[in-house]
Length: 573
Image 1 (cartoon, rainbow, N blue to C red):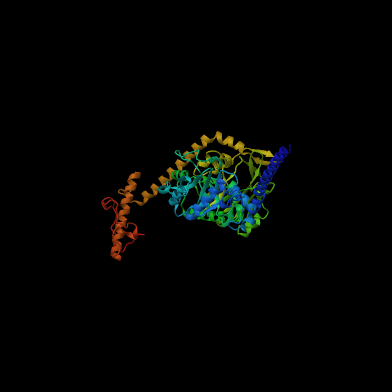
Image 2: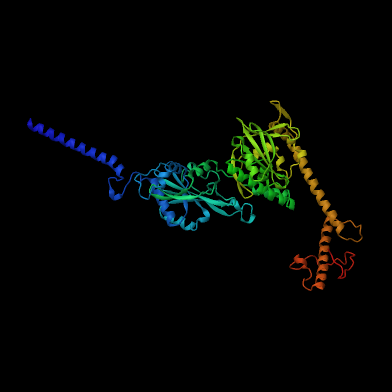
């Protein structure tokens, strides 16, 4: 009996000792290691979380970019939000002083970095080394939209995105390109036919669903989870830009087609107006940005951007839109301080406000304020002579960035719906909108609150019914106007060309041929005069007009025209 008791006691002591040892091991692992930053195996240097797939992928990517001098910076929204919460603490953190992975070890499928493409010197070499380090990389390219306005270069492709996968984590490298409006642009991530659509979960990407535009960020270097990385100096501003960064290009191809049908106005007056309108728009943008007021291109200025990628030379004003909730009481004084006096103020803040400022050379800046309802938006208009108020209805719209006259500026994302709400369907396509013929200029009106309001929905119906007739009228008017100009030009040309007999009727082809011969004859006469007077200029090279000599028909006009010979005392002006 005593032997049994001794065995039981021995067994109990053994179990108790084992339990105590297990408790010590648990306490050491979960409390002391967390406090001192050491694990069970000091030889491996393990720290809490630093063995995660995410951290190792980021570390390897940073080693790769640092060794190749690729200037990447962190733009991952999830990581930047976490960093922003402990920003002051991180700025004072030195390399290797952290014992717990708090940021790069957060569960996620991607970590997003960016680079400015013009600073990247060794793209192909970097791509090859990345694959040698174990990354599987996918490169997405597309046509450079900055060259769409240049026919000979419009097919040039540029890199837009890199996705490099390591184990179960992927690095998304967004390639930013410089734009003439002093901002950064990234392209749409669009997979081509041969690419693996299961390479990564593309739908979870935060960048690349559409092109985006960002202010050029200043950068600073900090230590995050023991890794040296660059981030935007103002992470809050960058994070605020992300959900509103969508960018749409001007339609350069359609603009070229438009100018093939309707010749561009390149007169001195038109060029001067465009220059002054551009300066006025830049001044207005700078003033509103300083106030923190969102705005967008509206009315005729928006139409010019969408239809011809330029300012409409006969519009005579610059039009902007502002949401009424963004109105600030010091807008008027801010514009007056920069030399734009208030010309008109219609309506009130709570009801159809509209402001008009006077720029130089009689160019106006019109600002329309938009009011939001449940299912639509509207802005008000007031007839200056009668004081009647009109209400213009618009479908709801959002704002996108675009580039216009070398500026990053907002336009309605739903541009075509916005323009048709303003001008009616089809009419805006015409080269010059003629006010007397626009159905939207002669609307049916309805009463609202004792005031006269214009219903653009009624307009749309009337415009749709008369759209075919309107297009026919504009086509006939345009052709008639073009034919009249051609006939007038030939009539003036016929008066300048001497014929024999004088009343001989010439066809247009005959007029052009004889005009070329007449010019050739005058060039030779001027050449002979110059040789006799100075002995310098050669025949057919007057004032440098024909540097290679005249290549017009060799036949002289003496056989075709009865033109008196000129002696050196005569001059031709």
